[in-house]
Length: 300
Image (cartoon, rainbow, N blue to C red; front, side):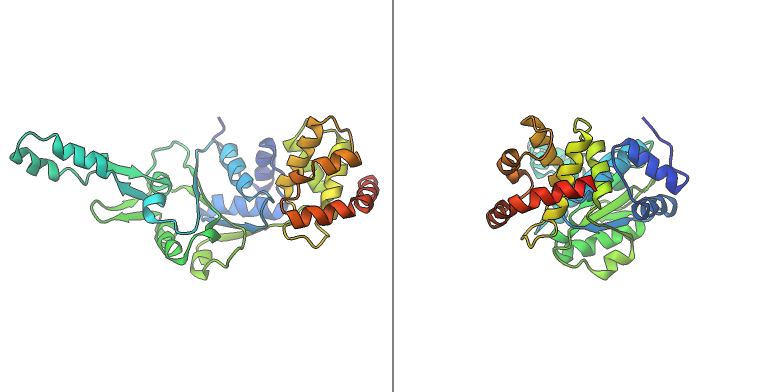
């Protein structure tokens, strides 16, 4: 497993490429600086453009363990950092045979043996040979109270546990945070991070991504499907398809034996790329014009 830290932006690009991740110069530069400066990296972009995949590829390229915290509305400290194993604590007390034993046991209850380590604590308190990569995924889905807790961790790579004290990272993890911009994340959190934006790729880059992630696809199919998705992104849809939808669509068409944009198979597999009924109807009605447009764009 690789343990070499890239020494240049080109090395970052090549290392990610070996993980079938096509990084543009801006993202490769941001990853390089995050590694060199030991700063968290905040990655924003529309859903499905490769933010989570970037973190996975970075971890794999470094030979590091990926620790993922999936954020959601109402996430609390007990799900993100740590909580006490109350069931084991209670059992420990009940197993004591005498009152004197119980008094001694109670002093042990708030010790590391009864601590349930969640992703943030696992990333901070690690003994990994290669520091892990901590992915705080979709931070915009959490609330401001959770953001406030993250400030201590991102500033000093430490977590305070009242019963045990402050746990500081001996080997700080590389922290990557992602956001789909469903809401604005507080400036105080962003100030502690480097920043990168991942946009929808142009046609050539999308084809390269498809060829890297779905090597079973022919160049023709990769170009034609990518071109069609590019056309869909120019429509007024509720949810534009991301690169992940392009990959799903290519794989669906391959499964049905398609070598190119067969109109019947395209319509049959439309749900791989378009996920809302209103969008499905709009795209289905436009397909007679979209497919020739995509074929022309692919040939160009």
